[in-house]
Amino acid sequence: MTPGREIGAMKTANSDIDVIALCKGSERYVFLWSDGHRRDLFGTFRRFAVNPELSFSEEDEAALIEKVRRGQARAEP
Image (cartoon, rainbow, N blue to C red):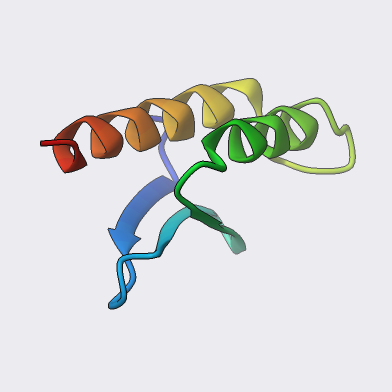
């Protein structure tokens, strides 16, 4: 992981909404999504990664996708 970057993920209390956050220095990126919308979430990561106005990088995108996928694998029976 890149120094200065932290990623956290959790399920909300009602388990209908997932949350993942990326902290980079003083910036915070927080994403919420519901089951069945992972593709939309990944599309948002992509749009952020290619936006030159954001510090969100392709490395951040890859790290978040991996974290979401690992979380999904643990959640499935």
